[in-house]
Amino acid sequence: MSTDFDVCVIGSGAGGGPVALTLAEAGYSVVVLEKGPWLRETDFCKDEIAATRRSTYTPNLRDERHVLEQQDNGVWQAESTFSSGWDFWNGNLVGGATNLMSGFFHRMKPVDFRLRSDLGPVEGGNVVDWPIQYADLEPYYDRVERRVGVSGRVVPHPHQEPRSSPDFPYPPTVEHPVAAHIDRACRDLGYQPLPVARAILPFAALGRDGCAYTDFCGSYGCSTGAKGSSRAALLDQAVRTGRCEVRPRSMVTRLLSDQQGRVEAVEYRSGAASMPGSTLSPASPSRAPGCCCCPPGQGTPAGSPTASGR
Image (cartoon, rainbow, N blue to C red; front, side, top):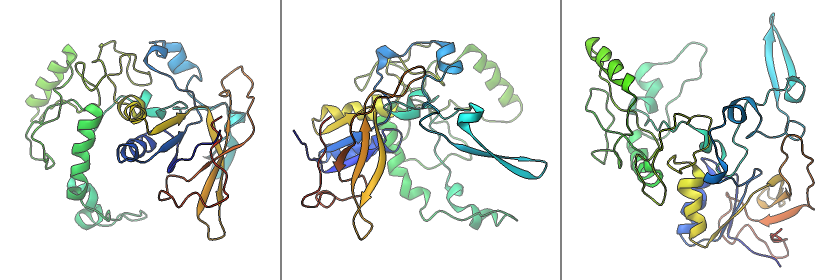
C-alpha cells in the first residue's frame, strides 16, 4: 500500500520539528524521516555511563564517518573518525540533540544583527550584518517560548532586548541554593543577576510533566517530558493532529532531482538502527515524494514513486 504526502521533512531535530508541526497544523500531510530510533520518556534514565561514556545516542562510525582536520606543526592532517574513534556528535534519535540539550533559550540582542554596522569590520574576519533585524524575529521568539514552554523571569536591565510579552510564559525553575550566593556576589560587584530562560517546564503543562530536579539534564534525555525537545514539545503534537507520520530508523541516502535540479523524491533505507554491537540489516530502498523544500503538490510529478509505508 502506498501513501502520498504533501511534504517530506528530513530529520526531526531543532529544524525539522517546527517545520513538521507548522505544516501539519496548517492542514498538510507530512512524513518525517529520521535515521535514529524513536525513544520516549520511559526510555530515558539517569545513567551517567550510558549518557557520557557510551555511544548511546551517536551513529555507528562504520556507517557515518566524519573527516576531521587538525594542524600539527603547521601541517594539516586529516583523519577519519572511524580511525580516531571520535563520535562527539550526538542526537541520533527522534528529536535529535534537543533531547539531550540543557535547554538554555537565550534571545539574541538587536546588536547581534548589526555587528558590522555597529562594531565595524574585524581584520581577517568575515563580519556581516544579518539581512533581517531583531524586530523581524521577535514575534517568532515569543511564539517559540510559548509553544516549547520556556521558563524564566524578565528582570529589567540596560541590555534587555525588547519583548512583545512582558514575561516568560512560565516562572523559572527552582534554583540551586548556591545560586543565591552567586547572585549576591554579582550584585556586590555591580552586575545584574537574572534567572536564565530555559526550555524546561517548572510544573506540568502542555501535556507534559514538570521538572523532577534530578540534577541530570544536559547530555541526558528527560524522563518527565519537562524539557522542550523537538520530540516532546513539537513532534508529539504534530503526530496528534493525524496529519504527520514520523518514520524512525529511516536514513536518507540520496535526493533525486529532475532535469531542472528540483528535488522530486528522496531515497532512504529503513531497518534496524545501527547501534553499537549490532548489525545493520536495511530493507530495500524506499522513496518518499516531495521534500521540505518543495511546495505541496509540486514534489510528486506524475509517475514518480510514492512512500511505500515500510
